[in-house]
Image 1 (cartoon, rainbow, N blue to C red):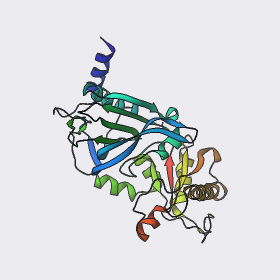
Image 2 (image 1 turned 90 degrees about the horizontal axis):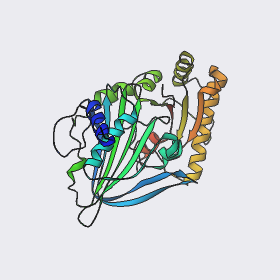
Image 3 (image 1 turned 60 degrees about the horizontal axis):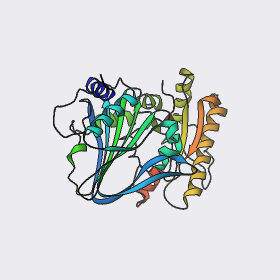
Image 4 (image 1 turned 180 degrees about the vertical axis):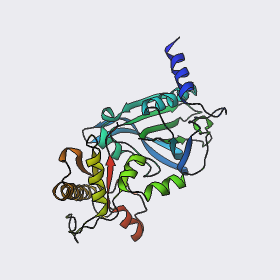
Length: 315
């Protein structure tokens, strides 16, 4: 059997999909968690890793469609899933421009420097994700698509961004269920932090309060931190990253610095007050690069000013 034949067979075995023609088919357990369409826009699509403070990219223009999917009961690796999807793209006439996984992409920096639909619709495990970008020749203008694939302990996640100059390329139209995963999203968001880490790989620490005009965490006791401490004590082989976020007011560099100081303050409280092992913790800041609400309203900006905890263990 040829290598191409083997990959096609692998795709058929791990992705039992609906038998509809001309579609980028996902497993039948997939649920679309988010979609955004623009009749005309542009997308800076990565075609290289994060290197020396930047990502090599090309600007694709046309009808832009962004989708996020949750693959339930997912027992395969992220590599298996993206391999099957890549095979379909190649068979539909796409040419790979770039592909990478986790550290080869640039790890944390790549994840937060490229466009990712917000949690909980799209989850990215910082220790396990796959990315590829591809191009398909068209009548005068090319079609573009990028895939970002990751997973949590119980589910896979796929982000598909495609740019079609005419808006009518059917070859990357997904063909599985379009029912929004609202029940799962609501259940996860209202669960204890440890359950959220197991189910979706991340949690917003919404009860934290910082001193006015400061990056110092307030003096109160916070339920979310106790839950993180209990979770890590019960799972000494696991680790998390505290990730600070800001609204879009001010310069990016200053916001990244502020968000990291706040995440560091949370990490230090876990160590000092809860006895959490420092080796299970990391602190990062991404400023305003990953909003979960609009920065055009006071309510949205308040939601964007937050600290999240992200599970970084892949086993």
